[in-house]
Length: 250
Image (cartoon, rainbow, N blue to C red; front, side, top):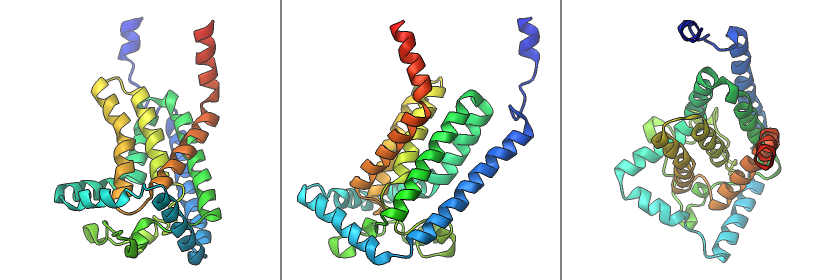
């Protein structure tokens, strides 16, 4: 029986092409929703700059405006610049999208909560962009910040390509921070190799460093993004966590 079962090819996609098409449509729907929220948030740049200045004041008063130090380290190495640039542009959609696809195909039982957690975190983040538009550090050169990604790979923040995939005033919360944390923890929980587990657990930390060092987020944005991820995870994973805690106390 075991030998026969092992010889049966795994169904790909696990739940049929119809379910895969549905998952893809959900992802496209999220992208469309992002663009709508971006359009709303873009209508008040004055408020976004006002909020950005407030964040700078808070960090300066706390003697914790260390994003400038990260930028200096980043600019000291062409290798670090290239790594950071590829990470920033690839982490949010390419890495996240491919990871979602891999989990769907290879760890399907973990996919649906993973998807729901990402979607919920992004919905919370989109709400934050509408209610609290905030200019990122790169828009404050007078304070010493630089746009580390300007012109990378022929792309600029003002290009048509980037305009389709970014919100210029989407600093709070950092969805790079939220998504990378969810992704890293989920992947570490479903990957069996210990070395890869460690790599995935380190992934969000690297992304957080990158988004600050490139001038795209303050550390307070990272804190807000982590909070968004924790709220989303608490809602989506509450039942399995309760079952596990109940089993431990049984």
